[in-house]
Amino acid sequence: MKTIGLVGGMTWKSTLEYYRIINEHINSKLGRFHSAKIILHSIDFELIYSLQEIGQWKEITEIIAEASLSLESQGADFIVLCSNTIHKVADDVEKSLNIPILNIVDVTAKKIGEKGFTNIGFLGTKFVIEDGFFEYKLKSEYGIKVIMPDINDINYINSVIFEELVNGIVYNESKKKIFNIINNLIKKGAEGIILGCTEIPQLIKQSDTMISLFNTLDIHASAAANMALRDV
Image 1 (cartoon, helix red, strand yellow):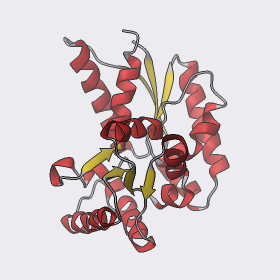
Image 2 (cartoon, one colour; image 1 turned 180 degrees about the vertical axis):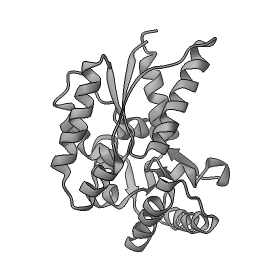
Image 3 (cartoon, helix red, strand yellow; image 1 turned 120 degrees about the vertical axis):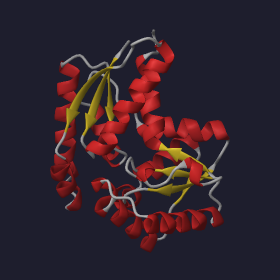
Image 4 (cartoon, rainbow, N blue to C red; image 1 turned 30 degrees about the vertical axis):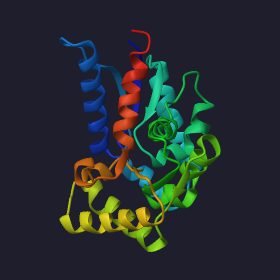
């Protein structure tokens, strides 16, 4: 079994879900008392968020690279960045490593491709949406068109993520408003919806709707477990 290097803490609540899903997946495949081989480097999210707010991505890249190199030196076979937003720096970080980063966009694109969808709605932080790296990679490498919310909806989603979900707060009113945004994306042609923030699954579940949801946290964590087991 390969050793997974998790760069977590962004936030610690979603990192808990990564740990749970990976271990449940490993145990379901191998049985008995098996669990994943994981090394975790947990980062203080206050620092990362403060740097995101002022656009200091060079500093963020250095922090994530340092964490990833530490995991590599401890024996990790590949790296999992436990955040959608942080994948903005994934390619630059990977250049400093001798081991691969399992990219959340790639594994999400694979799941969308399995459904045969080519038009996908997106919910995520303003950092991801405004930068466009997730959207660009899906379009340029996989031919998937991403339909984004309008600016007011982007700001609303961002406030729910950082004022509520990162603190573990879930309001029914917020859930209703997010589903109104989802319905608007469907009207614009979305065949499915990417939950492009690892906090959003606290609020939005597949059991709540008939449209296909692509929970990037679950997809990414499950892919990490599969990668760890590839040669078992």
